[in-house]
Amino acid sequence: MAINPKKHEMPSQEPLVRAHNFNEVALGYTAEIAVEEAQRCLNCKNRPCVQGCPVNIAIPDFISKMKTGDFEGAYQIISQSSALPAVCGRVCPQESQCESKCTLGIKFEPVGIGRLERFAADWHNEHSTEAPKMPEPNGHKVAIVGAGPSGLTCAGDLARKGYKVSIFEALHTAGGVLVYGIPEFRLPKAIVAKEVEGLKALGVDVETNVVIGKTLTIDELFEDGYEAVFVGSGAGLPNFMNIPGESYKGVYSANEFLTRSNLMKAYKDDPVTPIMKGGKVAVVGGGNVAMDAARTALRLGAEHVYIVYRRSMEELPARKEEVEHAIEEGIDFRLLQNPVEVLGYNNPENPRDPKNGFVTGLRCIKMELGEPDAKGRRRPVPIPGSEFVLDVDTVVIAIGTSPNPLIKSTTKGLEVNSHGGIIVNEEGLTSRQGVYAGGDAVTGAATVISAMGAGKVAAKGIDEYLMGK
Image (cartoon, rainbow, N blue to C red; front, side, top):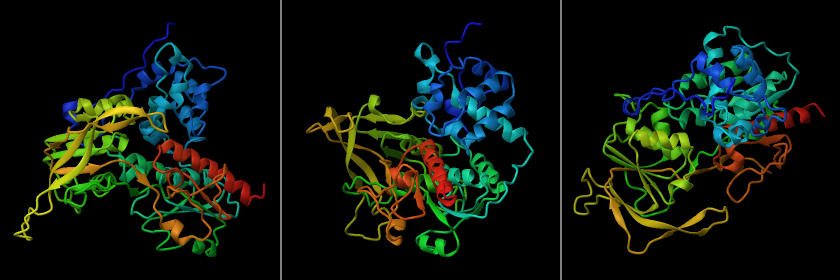
């Protein structure tokens, strides 16, 4: 049978329709399409795709099940390595990981591994009624700080080995960046809730509204009988540009903007938290978070949304799929441009003027690419005399985040690097005995799947530590 050179397209909402709703953009494969896509897999002996997966899913094995229509069997194989298959199938950058290693991709388009993973997970969630089997307890207790991707993964791996696991989450909902950072139209929150319920069925306790470092300290967790602690508190401290005018009303960090919309439902007609709606919006940055913020602003009713990025399209760090979706929806990309000042309305003669302090524009300067920087990317250089003003009412800063210093400042003996990331060894162990860490709390903002990989590494390290291996 001749191999289809192209992966099957992902059915999706029409751009002009989806730009005005928060429903999921990608609609998912049908069973027929999933089987046809699976049949493109060459089932290579050296399995390079597995090497490209941070959690080492047995990709050829699960795809072989899908070739025969055994979707539940495919899910069971995936779930042996991944605690969040329905999530990973949606938000992981497969194009730079497993699919980038696909042998078929040398000559043709690679197998749509992520799309097949999503289908298998969705099929299981829709058809399976059997609860996970509760593991036999092994008598050991472990605490997890943060219910994001790394924490959930670490918890799942340990629970399956019989550990009594408790997750302590600062927010009122478990999921971390999956619920506060990634919009509903990319990752429905019901999907995350379903994955969390699966962990609870394994015996994992999830305590929300607990801020480790405030409500409890890591030392107090040990005093309460926990024998090891995993810190997966993420990177929730937003970075700003430190330019004039960033304190004006209408300037948001992407974290705040997305949290208000995603977690606190500010898009509703009667929101419990306010957010700027309508008008003209500039989102500064070029990563996935910038795409999420821009597309969210559009759905909140913005009449025009700009992406302002200081490099060219070739250097844009966001996933290709997300950039294409943003362009299709009408986002205006202003490339090789960089903000230098946020402009605002000030009336010194009337300090009570209700317009005082609100954004009226974003002053930018045009850029050109110079010599490569330390990471090999060409450094953007300002072009003298090229300043101009974008007429906007709202500015969202999406230039990255750093680990929150709270845990470091309340935990003795915990070493961090110059960027605030917790220092760990190859097993995820910190400088403090019994304390492990992983994900964005260590690396700074990174991908969901890399955080999950770190959670798996730490779970293995904790198991070996407590079992005296």
